[in-house]
Length: 271
Image 1 (tube, rainbow, N blue to C red):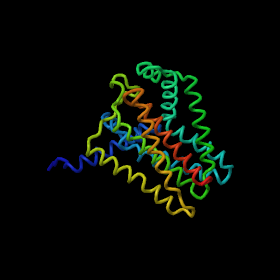
Image 2: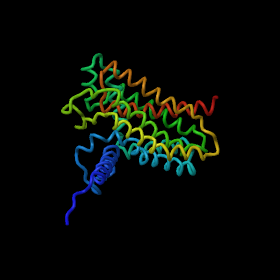
Image 3: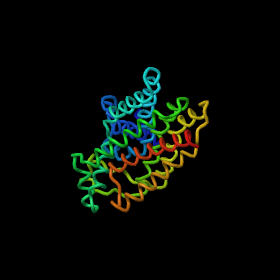
Image 4: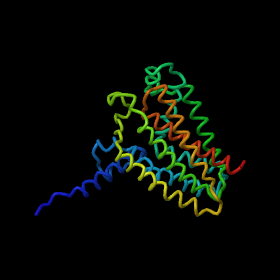
């Protein structure tokens, strides 16, 4: 006798499909060959962004740990960051470059959005990527070896969790037809936000446990810096654009992650 799936089964399937969509959206792995998901699932990829960090953060941490046993830390950091660029297709870096060009060269909201949608990269974008990559690589190499892999993993996940809150604070700045990726992220209600915060805690749990088991104590005040960075960036984006774009999400993630690295290195070495 045929029975219809119950509500719980449908909910589990929907959640799983959205997680698969997030992994497909935020990486360049051919996961679509393994599982097909409905196009509507891609409107919820930011909800699962921190969990996608298990893959991106885990790979970069693994690469750094393995490579640092055979090459200098600076070389290991450069190759690890390069590995993440390959894995993600430089998705977030493209957003950072577009934001640098848009906010650097645009004088009003319309002009900023127009520049950000242009596929060509300008001077501000090039300089932004150079400075970001140089800072990230050198700060990664400066991490104490005892906590480096655990921190690298945690930083990726935590920065994604912080950056994801931008869609709660701002409306989308374009229409669905104007979106570069063709996707407008779903807005959150109170229940969605509660579930998202729970997913963020679940995503962060492995990294926090990993850091706690390291022989060197971690300066937990550093966790406040990415949150402050996200709030300041969101306030600035609100003033200039009155809303966010996908490029803004990528840029906020990278800058939150960079602020976490910078504050941690400062706290370890100078305080």
